[in-house]
Length: 125
Image (cartoon, rainbow, N blue to C red; front, side, top):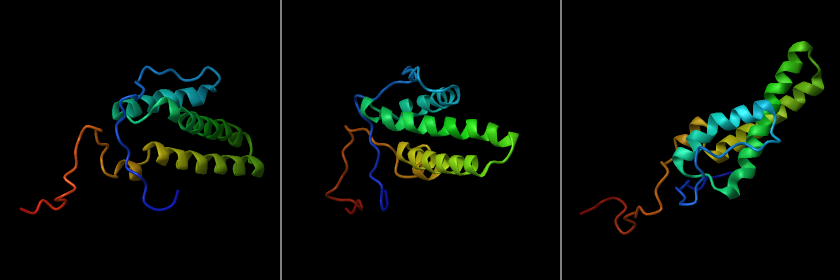
């Protein structure tokens, strides 16, 4: 998505850190799920509707790691292209989930209950 990204906001229906990875994920993808899920749960931004993005991100990271093992055995240009595509996909999904340094530097996640003072945005008295 180009341009300014919408702010992430806390969701009352957010998943918690005990949400288990799907059984069909590969070993490396499950390891990535277990690594990022506590952080996403702490921010309260991930809901059931977002699980597809998290699953896709974990699959992409798992694929990168699996392809790296294959590349160490010998460079195959097809494997390199596959890994490069998986890296691009993982980076895009990581940004969508707020897992990159740039996406984390955007305005902090706000609670839905918090009210903005839109009538006086510069706090002019």
